[in-house]
Length: 118
Image (tube, rainbow, N blue to C red; front, side, top):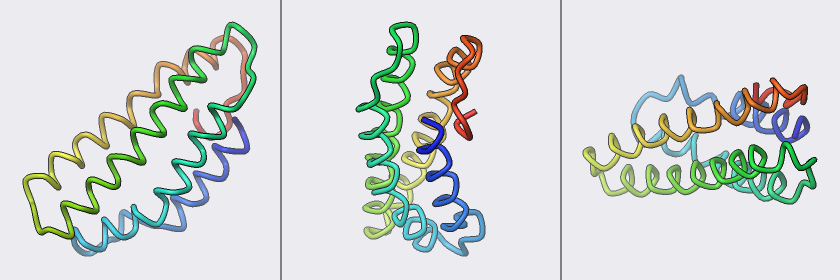
């Protein structure tokens, strides 16, 4: 979990989505980390956590997979100049980013080090 969190954090920093000048650049920069996020979801899902961490670990994997899917939708909306869909998917992305919070918090409360996911 720690290694995936570190790898994703580094990829997101390198993508520097916050400095994108327009929706197309934002979508491109997000797209550059989509595969990293999907792979992280696969890798987290493949972990064999203790029983008391299994549900939270699965939640994090599921959220990562949903984030990767939403990024694909953002890219499509930007490519089609569909501002309404773009905005809707960006809001969905924000919701997905928050969705892992309770699982991360629960793991931390149980004493697990989730690295930069926390």
